[in-house]
Length: 304
Image: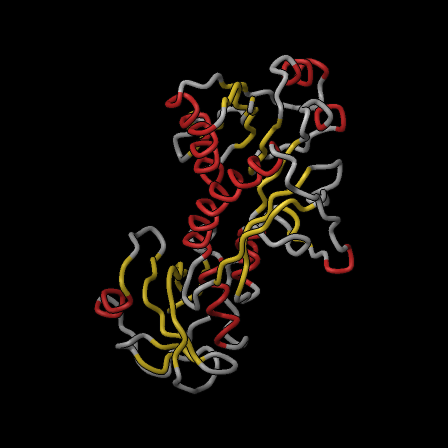
C-alpha cells in the first residue's frame, strides 16, 4: 500500500521502520525542527532522522490546517495515512484524503487515557495493564473507531520511560497487523464506549514535588511515572534533589522522615519507599549509597 506516515518523537520510529519494510511509504510528515538544550541547537525530530536514513521524503508544515498543506498531503494519493504522536490535529479535509482513512497509533487501551500523556498517566495512576490501540481518526481527540488493540502488563517498578519503549515497539507490531487487515477488508471498526472514556493532560514540572504524606505506593508511582521527564523532586537538608528510582519498602514510621540511611528509606503516610537513585541540584545522578556517603544524613531527619 501507499502510505503517508505522520509522526514526530522516538515513540513513532519503530512503526515507521516496520511499515517501510513492508509498504511503500511515499512521504513522512513531521513537526518542524526545534531548538534543544541550553545552547538551543536546532534539532530535527527523531522521525525525520529515521525517514532520511530510510530515503523517504520529509515534509514539515507548521500547520496541517492550511490549504497548501492539505493539497501537499493529497498529492501523494495515499491508500492510508498512519499517525503516531504527530503533535498536530488533522482537519476533516485531511482525514478524507486517504482511501482507507487515517489510522492513529495511541499508547493506551482506548477509550481510557485519551490525550497527551497516556503512558505516563497510566504509571502515575498505578495501572497494572495498558497497551496500544489502532483507531480510525475523526475530528475529535482520540475518539475514532477502534481497529485493534494489544495489551501488556506494567511491572511494579517499571518506569514510564521503560513502558514508553515497550509500547513503542508494540505499536510498531500492531500497526502492521492493522494495515494488513485493512488492506484485505478483514477488520470491523468498533465505536468507543464514551461512558468509559478518560482524559490525560500534558505532564509538566508542577507535578514534580513528592508529597510523602501520601501512601508509599502513590509516592512510588509518582517517582516512576515522572521518569525520565520531568523527574520527581524532594528537599533534603534544604536542598532540592531529583529522585530517579525507588522501590517499596516494608519499614514504617512518621511520614517524611528518614528511617534508614543504608538503605535509604523514607517513611510515607502509609508504608515507606527505598530511594535507589537521586541527583543533587547541579550534579550528576548517583546511587543513594553514594549520596549518603557524601552527606550528613541520619535516621529521623526530614525529607520534604
